[in-house]
Amino acid sequence: MTQTNFLKLVMPFKDKIYRLSKRLLVSNEEAEDATQEVLLKLWKNNTSIEKYNNVEAFSMTMTKNLCLDRLKSKQAQNLKIVHSNYQDHNVSLHKQIENNDSIRWVSKIMEGLPEQQKIIVQLRDIEEYDFEEIAKMLDMNETAVRVALSRARKTIREQLTNKHHYGIR
Image (tube, rainbow, N blue to C red; front, side, top):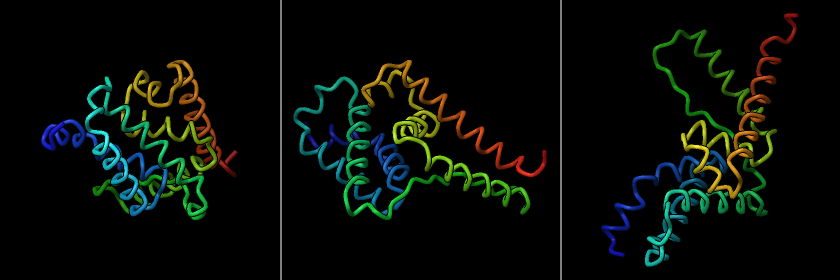
């Protein structure tokens, strides 16, 4: 495969690779390193990459596995899962503080979710993959993906609701 074909095939979803890496590894530097490593692996295997039906799904699976390996390694002791992509520039200071507080709480709640649920929430709600693609990436059946996503959302919703209603009842 030529460099031009590789770029046309892989580069459209490189940002998704980075965002998934960032979700799992938190650190910008770690996410950039993981993204670069995935792209390098794809380039090294560029002769066989076209045989995959869905190169994007293959790449996301590769990213997930690489990030989970890094999290399990000894050098990952200081890494944690957080997400704070939300920004709204036209809100009052009070609303902005509330939004930031909610984002912090969702991040804390997500830290307590099982790894699989964290990944599914990221892929479905942030990256907007459909259930079929997520099922292929995670080697699960679609029903199991839907159930895990539902449980993750329910946990997040219940814990966030409990936090906001604490002391009011």
